Length: 111
Image (tube, rainbow, N blue to C red; front, side, top):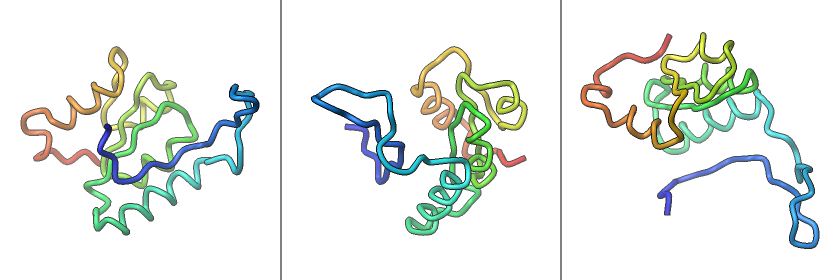
C-alpha cells in the first residue's frame, strides 16, 4: 500500500475491461491541479511551504507554484528550469529519496 491520504488524477475510460485511450470525466488541467493541491493543503492543515508537487509538463507549473517544493521528474526543459529540484534517472522512489535526504527538511525550496 502507498499510504496516501488523498489522490487526484484523470480517470481512464474502460470498455469491456480494456482501456479505450480516452479520459472519463473532466480533465485535470493546470488550474485544477493547483486548486486541488491548495484545497488538500488547507483540508489537512499543510502550509504552502510544506506542500510538494511533482510534475513533468507545462500543465504542472501552476501546481508547482502552489507548492513549497516543485520537483520535475523526467520533465520538459521549461519545467526543469522552474523546479527547485529535478530527477532524470530515477522513478518516483527518487522523489522519496530526495525528501528523506539528510538536511532536506532544513532547506528552503521555494523559488
